[in-house]
Image (cartoon, rainbow, N blue to C red; front, side):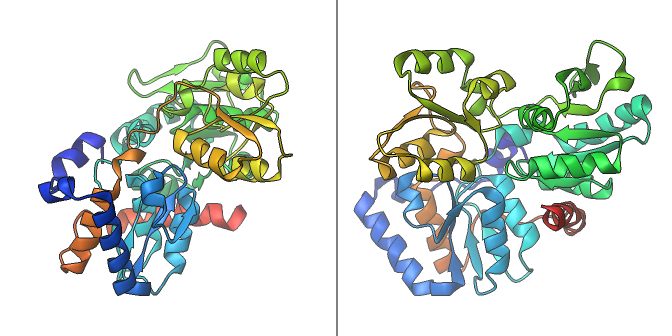
Length: 367
């Protein structure tokens, strides 16, 4: 579902939530959490606002939260404070008696929207005409349930930023080539770290349905979907150069969704949890520039007050769609449960769920 479709489908936030004070909303949220107890579970992604994350029962990346949701058999309602594809994954992994809600249906993901199932199926046919049965599809978990299901049907799997190397390595034991969706940067950085040269990677443009590559296509090992994270792509080589000029002793750590050029210039690159762990282990008084979402960077700066923690791009704004979820929407979602008429329920088609689970399980079995 695209962001536009979500906006059209959503019932708009009632006006009364817009006039409530922060204190009133926080009090009501606490009351409902206490009232429902273990019947209610609120997972919160690392990129969420502090005003929301304070009420999360667990904080983590998208897959961790989906797994925790799946393992929480006591929760009747799962109010997912993240974005649409994360709530979809939670719905895929939970049982039929559990309801997954997204407080604001506009909380989508521009990267996930860059690969529709229609484009993917059409692209697969075109690529098979070029490469035959030599490809295995891998999709980043930052993708729709339909794309995960596509990979499940075609012997592929899902990957996360923390296990991408293991999954790419596995995929290349199954087929000669991999088709990596939807984030070209994670795919490129991962393959490069495994020793695959840039010259063996091509970009697939789903709009023109063409391979962007100069040379003999038979030498291609990795086909990268032309997608990206609109947040992480804003970290630039110039940002790295400026930080090193301003702080000669700085440590630069970035997420692998950043461009290849930025990742190569950074000192370290890794998943959200990798970044969090590195900051935890860092020496007091050390200086760090972090190339990831601003809400997490600010939170790390608050937690690690004994270190200097900066955003790699000082002009960076928080992720627009992640920030859709706020106190009013969270309270609205919880009160709808209290009234026994839950809103914004995420429900994935059973056939899509079946094939998507196959892709996810292939990853969980190997990573």
